[in-house]
Amino acid sequence: MIAETTIIGIDVSRDWLDGFCLPGQMRFRHSNIADGHIALVAMIQQLSGPFKVGFEATGGHEWVVWTKLAAEGIVAVQLPPAQIKAFALSRGTRAKTDRIDAELIARFMAFRPEVGRELPDENLRILRTLTTRRGQIVDMRKRLRAQVGARKKQGVSADVETLDDDLEDVLQTQIETLERRIETIIAQVEPFSTKANLLRSIPGIGPVSAAMLIAELPELGRMTSGEAAAMTGLAPVPHDSGAMRGRRTIAATCAVSGCARRNLS
Picture 1: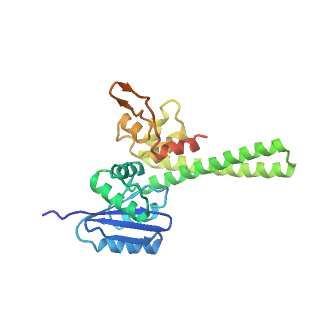
Picture 2: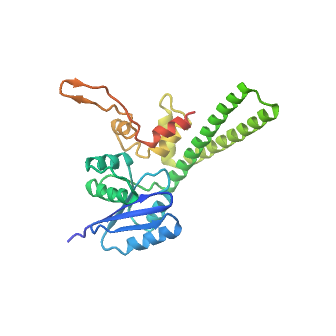
C-alpha cells in the first residue's frame, strides 16, 4: 500500500513561517530565522510517510528556508502567486491572513500537485542574485538622474553637482563590476553559455537581456514559445462571449516582466 503524501503549505513572510498540513489539518508557526528553519525541518522529519512542502514566491523571503529544506532532502516547491490567488477566488475565499494563506497553499498543492518549481542549482541562484542586484542599482541610477535634473532646474551649487557626479560614478562602477561577474559565470557554466549564445543570436537581445532571461526563465529550452509567452504574461488573453469578440490583453505574471524594465535601462 502506497503511503499518502503529507502536503505542507507554508506562508512565508519576513519574520514568520505559518504552515498548514494535509491531511490532518495541523497548523504551525516558526520564525523565519535559522533557529526557526531548524525547528521546521525537525517537525517535518517527524512526520510519517512522504511529504512535500510548498510556498508562494515572496520576493526572496523564502530562499533561505528553501535552501535549508533542499539541503535536508525535503522536497519543496515555489508556487506562482497568481495561480493561488485564482484558486482562492474560485473557492470564494476573500479573507487574507497568514493562517488562511498557508491553508490555501496546501489545498492548492492537493488540487494541482504538478505545479511548482524546485530550488534552482547554486549557479543559477548566484546568477539571479547578480542580475537582480544589477537591476536594483540601475533603478538607483535612474532615480539619481531624475533628482539631478530636478535640482538643476532649481539651481544648485557646484559642490552639490560634484557630489551627484561622484555618486553616479560609484553606481556606474558597481553596474560594470556586476556585469563582468555576470559574464564570467555565464562563460564558466556550460548550460548558461549555450543558452546565452542562442539568445544573443536573436536580433535585439544583448548580453544584459540574455542574462536576465537565463536567470529568471530557467525553463527556456524545455517549453514552447507559446508556453513561454503565457508564463511571462505576454500571451494575448481572449475575452470572447457568444458573438462578442473582446479585446485581447496581456498581463505580466512573471518576474521577467518586472526585471526587464530595470535591467534594460
